[in-house]
Length: 233
Length: 209
Image (cartoon, rainbow over all chains, first blue to last red; front, side, top):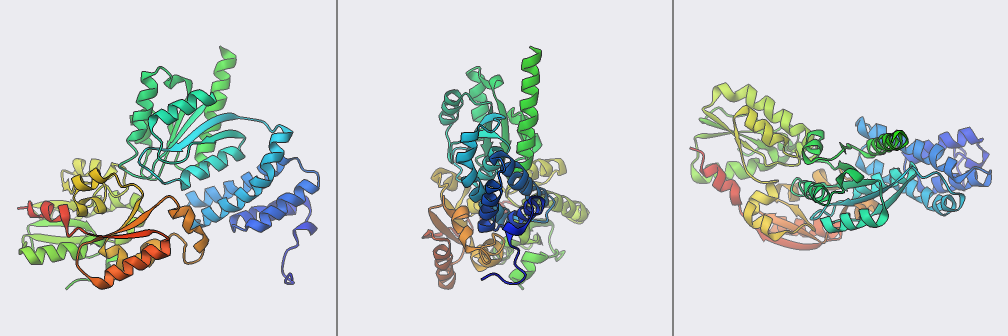
């Protein structure tokens, strides 16, 4: 039974509900997010609007507070879990309704590294921002990246590493792309706790992304430049 | 006297100003370094430790080491940094070069305790490592910072890709062995105890003359 102070989501108007969903996402309340998504869909919201206005906007607040040291990894993971639950409802509907596709990204953790929390967050936020994401999982050798980029006709390669010992492998992948003459065909974004901007430049990546929100913004910026270049050409 | 783990975690320790060479180390290595000093009579080595909690915030390490080197360099013949890369992504190594000080080799203490060559040869990337210090401080350095005390359901998101917990034992302590086994159980991982002793830490400090 609901307590007197409990908020009844279905009694909120659309604007209040969206704000409440931002709060619920912030607090990692998975069931409330699922309920909110269903309510908005029942009210005739387009799945893409639910995704961007309720989930992605909420997760962007979480990302900003993580960057500012207000939230920490456990809270971000809970929020991500809640967002994932909401996205699970929306995904089949987005496919049906033909939501805009911003670009396609192949993403994976490099060889010798099994850490995937950051990579999963980036993948989810990229999907939320309208990118199609092909997730290669963990411990990826160069061949797997190359094969996936070619097979998927992707725009972006995202590589992640948590270990000082595994991050140099990103250079192996980029150098192999150069050898194969395919480096310029893809935007290469790298990320992971021990990385920094200098490292990204040194290995020949297009950009180092310090967190998931930055990765999304960077990917969008590069995609618009790519489109501009294509239209100019 | 060996400081408490709480002191080593939160504030570190100041130098005693008794040796010619200052070691600037992670608080998580204090006991091991003091043991080695005592066992080998390395009275020419003085020790200061930065808070071990920087293990959780590696981006603080490079600046903290820099400040400590700057503060003490006039008082000693030489300074040696007892941090491995420790998640600084090469920044600590680059800074040590700029400062003209040497540091211990390796990606992290798990590697130099086992011996950097032996550790690299294992290619054991599905193992989660604990040292004596981290077994004693498991809740403060693993369980609580990862939020597992409040949200145990997050465990598999963190550890789902790991297969085993390796306790790298610096000392032979059955109580720590038992605690480490309990840590493995809590994380849902298989358990292995590996007696490493002090590994490359002893070798590196032994070369300082």
